[in-house]
Image 1 (tube, rainbow, N blue to C red):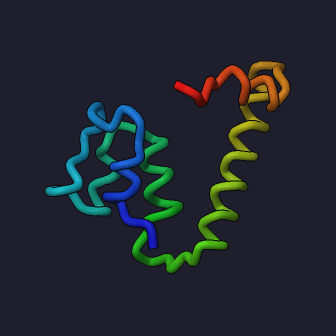
Image 2: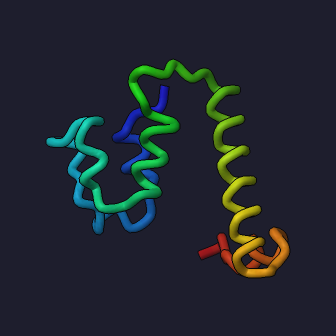
Length: 90
């Protein structure tokens, strides 16, 4: 199972979150000030869910797909172009 601590450790720009994994709990994520962080915690670290690796992978794939579809519609760019512009090398 993924933990909030793991998400926090992996999260870019976590220093801007209003969340301290050493003091705050899952119930405090709503106050983090970052809706994407909240989404990750709800979807992947919810203590009520017991995700295996396949479930986690599927949720990640569906979330990435949904984000790309919405971003494509909003920007008029193709998903491949959006991925290239994201510059994952940095």
